[in-house]
Length: 225
Image 1 (cartoon, one colour):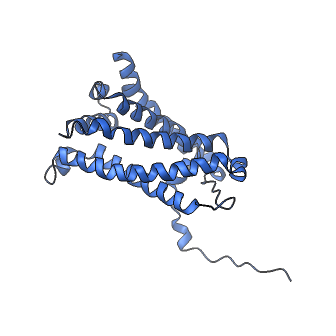
Image 2 (tube, rainbow, N blue to C red; image 1 turned 135 degrees about the vertical axis):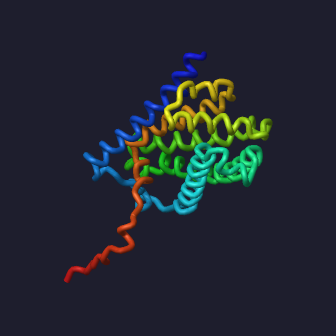
Image 3 (tube, rainbow, N blue to C red; image 1 turned 45 degrees about the vertical axis):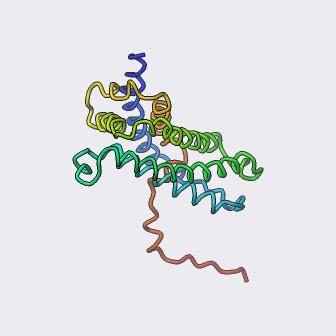
């Protein structure tokens, strides 16, 4: 079990990060025409706005919440809140955002898998990504259950030490999560797997901010004579 824990949480994170950065760079360099969201709104707009807003707002809050929660050193916030208060804040905010994301993501997944027009234009990667994201969010919500039994902040500090240790190339980082609940381990593993899939799916569109759109000239469209 110790070997498997080291492999999954000490070695696999670096494999995932390497695939993420190298794969994303290679795709942007060699396949820019495939770098898009592949929007299906034109094919079916029913409940699309509600589902998309819930999903995207929820996942953005979750993403930045994880970034701050895992990568912020203790000294950066200890003057304001304790680790226990920070963990409780993560449960409340993350829980609300998670429910939003789960509802919106489930609606989008159902639409993609059942709507004939959307289904016909979807690739296997499209279906896989939305389903994995929904499962990942569900796992994240399930982590609230064991978290409620440990609101002293010690658990969050362990995960922060693991994440910061991975990014700073520290040895033995897998030990920080060795005794974590299996739900947390499944959540982390699936999150790393999403990083592996990132360069090869529509997820790359989240790196593109349409800044030029606001300053570009209007397109003139005329009717035929």
